[in-house]
Length: 266
Image: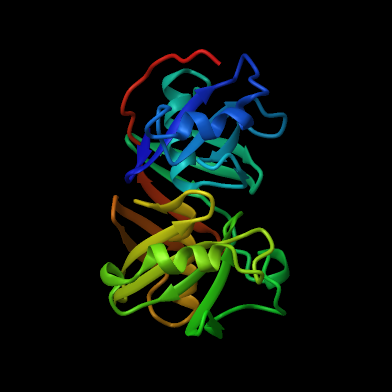
């Protein structure tokens, strides 16, 4: 499946556990020697929600949350009768997320953004909003947000020409970020739209990142660039993000698409 080009293998482990999947993730995600994807998603039963989602990057590491992935997983679960209702809850390492299925579009309540550095985590004090820093002889201004997983957002003038593949890994593995970091490179188009590229920890640059789009919207509001409801234009498609003033939650709406279905022996 894919959400705006961010692609996934989704494995149904609702009735059968596959404890070796963490070790198999790197092999399955390989685009030449496996099935190929950005991330492996596993749907499991939950004691606290309708479903549980496990997420493995293509380097084999497990992560807390995936915004594009959770939309795909919700549609997968509905199709395979793992849930009946169009409103459901999904347990992740980044907390329980509430979802509404709207035909092929899915709205996800991503919860409140986390802004305190120690909780993101970032090895700094307080909130990191437009903070100046130097790395490898270059100057940057960063804003850090967690949407269940950590993000570092930078605003650039021309995102199409920005050296994402060079700068992304420098930030991902920088000592300032104890759990590594997802890095967003955002170009503000106007008060209602942003063009975005994302370097995801453990996966590299992807065509879309749901949590990254949410974090970018929050960062852009905090820096006075945009309104609270914004269209995020990613290489793989658009996401609608709304940082609600009513409950301080971030709502993400986007697609989920099934590409093919098959079987593999594990």
